[in-house]
Length: 348
Image (cartoon, rainbow, N blue to C red; front, side):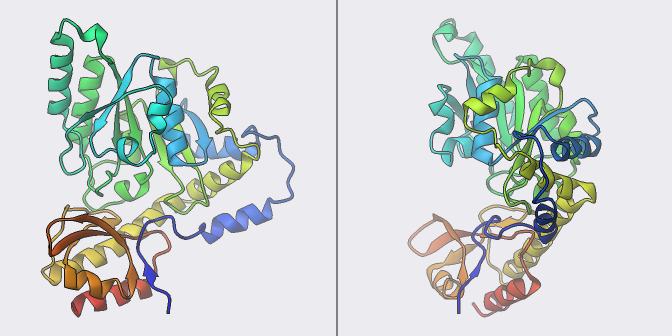
């Protein structure tokens, strides 16, 4: 019997409704590179959802590509981007940002989150140094919602970060690869309209929330930027999909009837069942997450038992007998798979 997989949230293909729409529109003839009616309708649906009628939206295939293009565009040639040391762009993007010629300036994270106080102290120290012009000046701040650890920024935390960014004229960018599960978490106090208000640019992750592939990059305040050549930059970076309507169609489906949020709500619900099972078994967690990523701390024996039936990520060894692991649920995680895992946890 193959193992049941909880390794990540993009192991399945796409939601059946998306596949149905892609099939139904397969023989349509449309203009290429995202200049088509499907992409325009998807953009309008997103604008309505975030309550930003003037937002500019661009589609890209994946998260690393979206981050790279956005950060390259938002920074002047000599500037760097601030993020925490465990930030996705710093750890898991193969030096993509550095390859554009921009430095990643890291600050310590707190359970996967950037603290506005730390950001302010760094900026104060940087600009109080009389030689700062000989260093890499920060041009923007990057955070992920939800974080790499499944943790969440509160509305107050985001507001404070945005305030510091405004004070120092920094752009504020939110990586939304797992935006859906963050916004649908029982622990969040932020909705998508508020999040759009609190940043300059963010993206809506489709790859990890039911799309076959694709992210929607949203400029919430387009008047602040000269976007005339942005599509040219996307093409230069290899990100302008010829059959761009494939991205538009997927986001049409995700946002026309709330499927995007339904998918994320399901993933969170399944993760909370798993979280409760570990809690009842008196198994601790590395991070307190209320999203679709859970990080229990297992003994070597417990890990060996569970790994016989389930695939999950071994996150971080803590000592000779304990290891933190990650279980990740998705829009497609079944009740049957979760129940089998819960039963296995009970028998540890």
